[in-house]
Length: 163
Image (cartoon, rainbow, N blue to C red; front, side, top):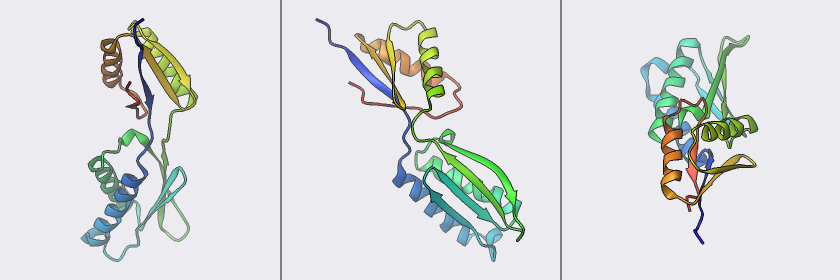
């Protein structure tokens, strides 16, 4: 009897790396000349990050610094969705960023459909916030991974539990 091989498609953000990216961003902002005298805050709350800065130009610079730190820490930028920049009464600007942890049902269905349409001989099943891909051939599993990496998805994915 042939042994079955499998892996999971999921995306879990590394909380420690995210925390490090936030701290590095705040540290860099505190030393930069263009942020001198302007309060900058980044705060993580559950599945959101709240950013605030003195004006819109500083907010855009802060987001740019934050994204570069995320990339350096190995966090996929598709996993963080930045919202609109909002002005409040005091003149400060705020921005909320949503953190992707796991896959939604729609994202799982989209991955399922993509894999089935690829005609690679594997079986898929949705397991909560992940998709399990099973095949008797390791080569087919590797073909699925290669195929999914070539796709232009609007969300982050990673491959876990390769057995």
